[in-house]
Length: 145
Image 1 (cartoon, helix red, strand yellow):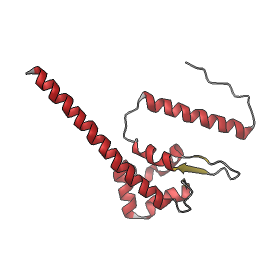
Image 2 (image 1 turned 90 degrees about the vertical axis):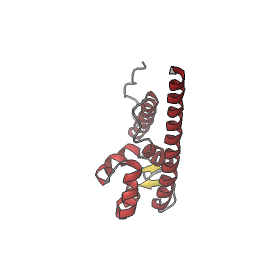
Image 3 (image 1 turned 135 degrees about the vertical axis):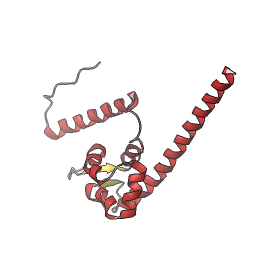
């Protein structure tokens, strides 16, 4: 019957969602272990040098590609996308633990309103840091929609 087919389809969707969530959990665990291994100074942030160490070990590079679908050709783009300026006098660019794990674990997601809002929030934070760094408040505020 049509109702049975609809129930079956809904059940298949639920199983797929559960499978996707389980897969994300497994990727999150592996990315956490990778971060822990690469964060040499145990600062909970990863400098560009620490990040680029992914590709110093062939098996780690292969695992990274399997987990994220990204290769060494994407390294600089990934670092730029995930890094922020560390607080403190050095102003070093680094990737925080959460940004590494969640940013790479979402890599395959379709673009969503939530991801756009997250990006806008991150841009606003970077805008504020830039204003502070330059010591100017002459930037025009973005229009609110």
